[in-house]
Image (cartoon, rainbow, N blue to C red; front, side, top):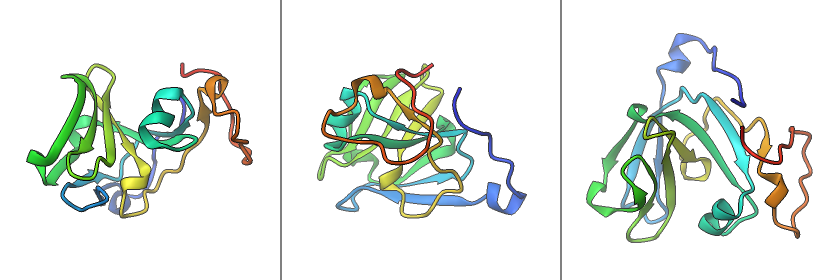
Length: 144
């Protein structure tokens, strides 16, 4: 697995981050205990975000809570593997992955700054031809 486990002081580990969709109909909290953060360049993430890549942070599913707008969630996929959007503004909030155990929070929907930052670029083998990675993070053709 890519990334580094957080080893932060307890006060920071217990911090709750807030996030929301563009229109504000859906609001969530997530513990600032992300296990990994990556920039995904796969064609699915590019299409879902309308961008060159999707910065996301992975965390155990039970550490994310929808605090407003549960009835406004739009879910694409299966019970234990799906993408979650807002029905009103279509913001891409997170994905349920790894047999339902984890969520990949789209970092752009966080209102607060997480203690973790992306540590690598993944699926660069299918990245947009018009985009050039300009940072020094490791690049991987696929996701292990």
